[in-house]
Length: 122
Ligand code: ARG
Image 1 (cartoon, rainbow, N blue to C red):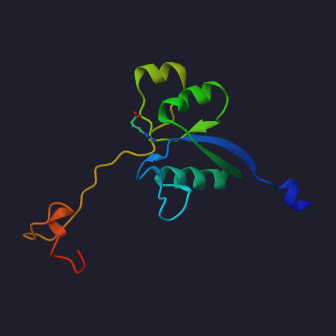
Image 2: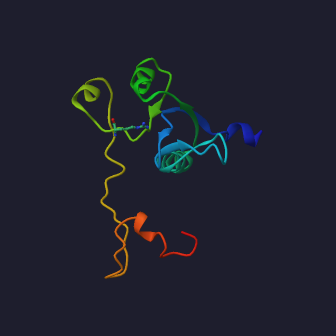
Image 3: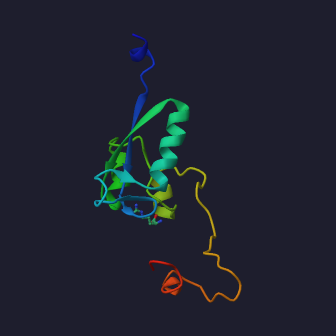
């Protein structure tokens, strides 16, 4: 059938869902792994015609998992180090930023703590 021939190929993805907001589980909402990395990987995969199957693993078992062919790739907010670079390939960086909370001049709001009493409900 058409559905069969056009079925998306599945890639096995390793992550460690203990690193909000990049990959985490919000158990109050569901058991799903969510976050920036998950969304980014899904968007790219969808454009390339792949489906992703995420596996939640201890961060230190992600590279061994790649080496053992348990994963096709890992997305876990991982930074290159000399040791890692010797055993796996890193992409170009997908997240480099310097972002701040912005408040009106003279508001004395420098952090979320400072919002206490200044915002309805805070
Ligand atoms: N960027 C740091 C590293 O590569 C921490 C990454 C932690 N990621 C995670 N999903 N727990 O070592």
